[in-house]
Image (cartoon, rainbow over all chains, first blue to last red; front, side, top):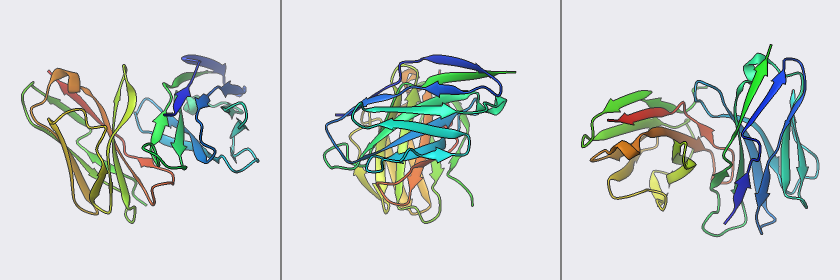
Length: 118
Length: 113
């Protein structure tokens, strides 16, 4: 079974600064996707970014980018030029693409609460 | 395009009552997922459907929980009878195919007194 660990329960950053959220995962599979979802106070789960494990290039979406280290099983999220609207809980998630009982299912980390201060 | 729609957004009920949560997936998405989020257990997959057929219900906690998908645009998650430990946020999500991004609805916050 896969596990996803987010070791930072809470983080804070000043507006316009850069912050990095950590995520590690444990799997014996080589074919998978990784995701970061954002959950603001409204509770809506919003996709931030996706990374396919077979791609060596790190995914980027505007101010959001990842540092994907496949050998280290690490998948961190970098938020540049932080904005007040980035305040939310951030979840790292793993999706197995290789088969077995967890095939196609999302496994979530416990989340990191990010607060952006003005 | 409309996203995943869930209703109600909030539900308060008393122990023993039947609760029905509703979900409308994104049009054209063949997969629908039900999740539960609690402080203690985080986000858990309860069940998912493909083309209206339940594929994996291994996450359904007990027989009090049931889910149906009578057509491609509607699904329900029912709890009967409800218990205080069922209090949680319940999310519905949908995806075009199984191995693609899942898009979540706004969730239903359930409180069982």
